[in-house]
Image 1 (cartoon, rainbow, N blue to C red):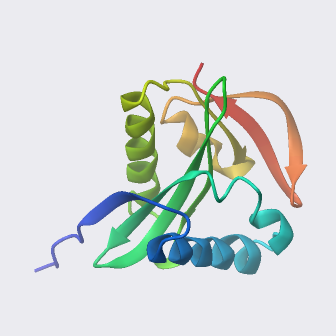
Image 2 (tube, rainbow, N blue to C red):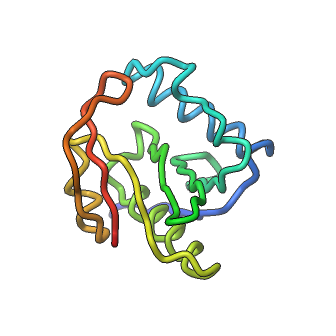
Length: 147
């Protein structure tokens, strides 16, 4: 008999909260340690004012993302899932939750920049790539939007 799947809770948290700080730690593990992104690029001026979401599984942070509100759209970024939880649908759940939250406050246009190996994931959520590929922190990216 297999174990029941773990429940995933997606919640919105302030950047300065305990969970917000734990989310920054997870981002550091994924972007800086795993992917080699310079720490001065990973943390930026948008973090204090962004809307942050975390995925909790069994009380532990399993993923995070942030939303930065711009006049023309909501910019989703810094999407990460803990290496032990990848492939379990957490990123999709976080994206849907964040987009639903934005729609609930009247923002229905979404933009992001995706690592090129993640394009298929975002396309399934309604994003389309546009423009030329570019490098961000040494990693190939494409801009994507839903409008």
